[in-house]
Image (tube, rainbow over all chains, first blue to last red; front, side):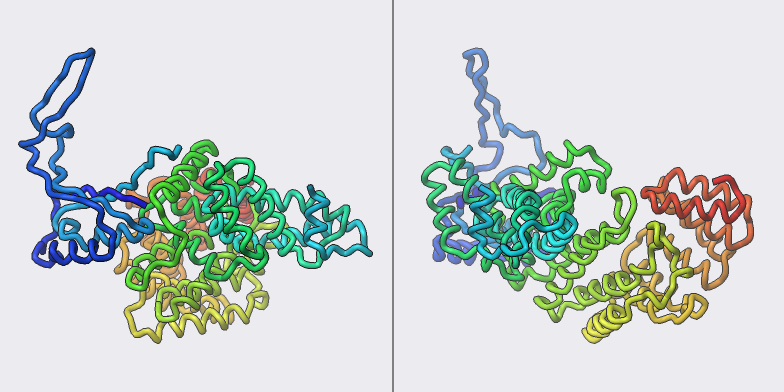
Amino acid sequence: MKYLMFVATDTDPDADPHAAPDIEAWFEDVSSRGKWIMGDRLRPREDATTVRVRSGELLLTDGPFAESKEWVVGFDVLECDDLDEAIEIASKHPMAHHGRIEVRPFWPIDEG
Amino acid sequence: MADQESEAAGNVHQESGAARTGDVAATLDRAMVEGRLRIVAGLIRLTGEWELAEDCVQDAAIRALDSWPRDGIPDKPLAWLTTTAHRRAVDVLRRRRTEREKLVVLQRMSERDPTEMNSGDDRLALLFTCCHPALPLAGRVALTLKTVSGLSTREVARAFLVSEATMGQRLLRTRNKIAHAGISLQVPAPHRMAERTAGVLAVIYLLFNEGYSATDGDGVRDDLAVEALTLSSLLAALLPDDDEVHGLRALLLLQQARRAARVDAVGDLIPMDEQDRSCWNQREIANGISSLLTSRRSGRPAGQYRLQAEIAAVHSTAPTPDETDWGRIVESYDALLRLQDSPVIALNRAVAIGFRDGPEGGLSSMAQVQADPRLAGYHLIPAVRADLLRRAGRASEAIEAYRGALEQARTTAERRFLHRRLRELGGPA
């Protein structure tokens, strides 16, 4: 199954961020096991542009669509056997320790 | 269809012909209590579909009621039910699935002998999956009661005081999350075992209580309590080093040991000090004590289940109510309160103090407990107070408190018990 990891900040981070695992080790592990499909960092929310079309008119807003104290700073697409495997991979990502990670399953286009 | 199935099961008592309805019901009941969960777990493992698995087992039971009285009770009722449920699942899938999906699932199903498809661990895996922390808590408990214990949606709804439709939606959303998020039917990895086990213990305990003091009208659902015990034994076998698993098993055994003495001939609850202790199951008490000793031997500080088992053990080993070591019981409640600040534990502690120091001591302890806003409207408060007032000889206050308790009683047996107390006090019941 494919999962998207939203890597996000957290307003209530771990008190000891130095205990967080190393991102290079994480990447080495998931990619060598064939679990990592793609992913990247994202520019900060100041660089986001929100796009809407209403009544044929293009409406652009500076910034992200959600007014939130937390924001997505990166993403990874994983190929996992099941949710438990995706949770294990997410739990070893440094941002699980001083941010938060949302794991969301893909909804394949041919599935109801 | 039914004929085809009984023929395929192959081992019907031909000579005996039609079976008596009472025998059929009793045999079916026994087989379902013994094996329903194994069949459901096995079918979920094969099909990945929870509702289908439950429905097919239910369907097999209905077919048994139709064909067993006519054709006779099969030699192996459980094998008959397993085969019938399995065929029903194949049938439903054949009609419903797209070609691609059908091939995969049906291929998997045809590869196994349905009567040999279950291991004990399938049930445990099912329990871990029902209790998966990625599921909403209410959904975990509801799904465990529905799938593991086999309660109807209506019974689960009543247990949570919500409508059947609401509970149906909750179960559907929970099952959908399992399917869509890819939660596998499996026992967790060893390094996740401890944290996942705590969640399972909580659900097993809740399940046991559902059986021990059923919310659906009167009566004790012994099968649920037995199922909870079976699951706790299975868990103890799989996790022999977990002291809380043994603690919970000890607690369940010690409580279960008293079941024959808890209810009288008409199904009324008998308070512990009036129970006929010769009816307590000494084998279960011995097994419970043995589990408690195993739990103690871990050397770890006592967890909540071991502490509750310590309390149950004091009761179970007291030859008469007067010889109960209430001092030790109060100590265990003190330790429990240090582990978790629970007003319900404080209430039970007040009851114990009422026996250690006398009813007036209990009442003054109750005064503090009752002030806790978290217990506002808690159904047992007036009943506990009423009992302390009765024992203190304050009859008119007791009568008033018993009336309050009646308004909040949740089961018929509870209400009958409170009526009896009112009659004994000479108040209008």
